[in-house]
Amino acid sequence: MLLIEKIFTSKYLLFIFLSLLLNVIIAIAMSIKNGKIQVKTILKCSILETICIIIGAKFLDIIINYDVYLHYINNKFYFEILTNGYSFIGGIFGAAFCIFIYSIVSKEKIEELCEIFIPNLILVYAVSKIGCFFNGCCIGITINEYVLPIQLIETFVYLLMYLFVIFKSKSTYSKIYLSCILFGIFRFFLEFFREKTGYMYLSISQVLSLFIVVIGIGIYCLKYNYIKCNN
Image (cartoon, rainbow, N blue to C red; front, side, top):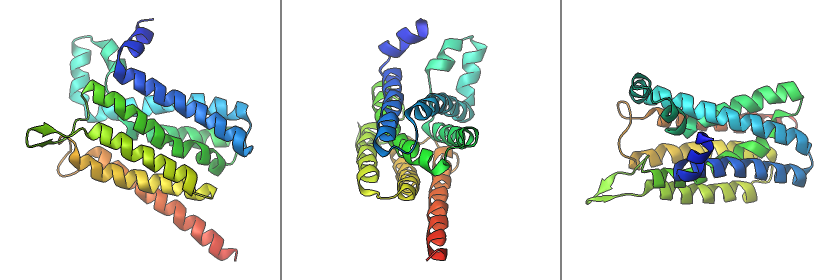
């Protein structure tokens, strides 16, 4: 009950909750629209994906901010461990892991699952950034004593990106590789406008963003070569 109360009193957790709920709703709607996968299957995968997003996001945040979590543990702030700090890049890898495992277990085509779930991660990120704005985390750099509202800029950018991927991508694979490439590139460069949190010159999130771009390019190359070999 305390956790539920915290969700609806904390704007940070509320927007994270809303972003994950939107992911489930849109995934079901897309399943109904394209008719490739049963709604029941998508609902099951959505629930598991949500759990994996949360676990992945928390796991990466612990790695990045391990000193903060040591402080929580030493002072027995166990509730704060659950309610504070989630790194979305970790959530992406958690979602990817879930989709991969679920495709094997359910014997559904992984590309069809990815077509539904991967673009939605952009929307999840966009909505959750509003929560970061209200929470005062992930703040932007200071320009002439003015703190750049990078969280809201990210929300705007990724909402446009999501709409572009959904409405301009014609094929299953283009939705997947465009989501990876565009998200990774923008996430990498927008990080420079955040208050410096990186190790050396790049943050862990930037390194992982580049890895996501490489994955997207790899998917594009594999699909291009497949089409070329079959023509």
